[in-house]
Amino acid sequence: MPTPFNNYEVMRDQMAGAFLRYDQKAMIRKFSLKHDADFLYICLVGREYRIDRHTGAVSWEDTDPKTVYPADYNAAMTIYDVLCCSKENCRASGEMVSIESCASVQGGSLSSQNRSFFQHAADCFDKDPAALAAACEKIGGTRLARGDAAYQLDLFAFLPVSVAFWRSDEEFPASLQILVDRNILDFMHYETAMFALSHLMERLETLCDR
Image (cartoon, rainbow, N blue to C red; front, side, top):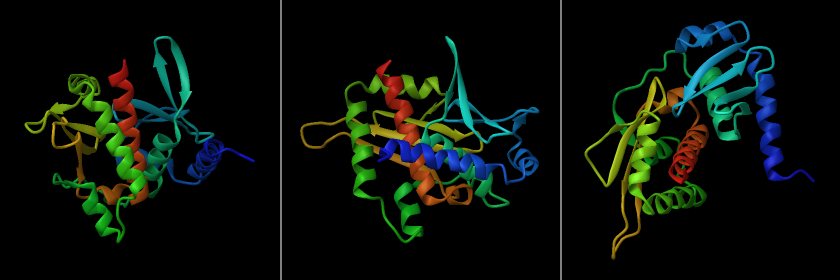
């Protein structure tokens, strides 16, 4: 029986095939993508990914040492959804709102699994808020004046997100607030927004551990 991880890989690879049915020239125009004969390029959370124009596979290159890695499920599915399924005239509003407000627009709510994941990230950052600040700056974040560490980051170059963190104290656990552009659902489905934010938290946690 396939493991859940393998099931995610299968879904990611199926989307690679589906990607090839969409108009790549339209994607390039819509998002001003860097491109060549073999790849489209797009930055997600401070890392440049490349989408193979012949297979649809998404990957990224580490320069030290030079190694190419396949994009993980959350990153790949976010990129596919934005490039293939975003609204025609999607534009960031410039107004930041809580991700919970997007859930209410969809008629749903954040699942307990997502809440526990974000709390896990908050607990991780509580160990060393300075490491969180350094991680945010490493991926190009702009410091904001709230919390113990708060930054505006580029989810994509055309779509910002902000993260604010408060340390735990005697009365309250560590707290994490995530704000997204009000128009985020013009760029991706709600479920994909959760993939994108999960990818963001995983990137920050990894950078904090270095």
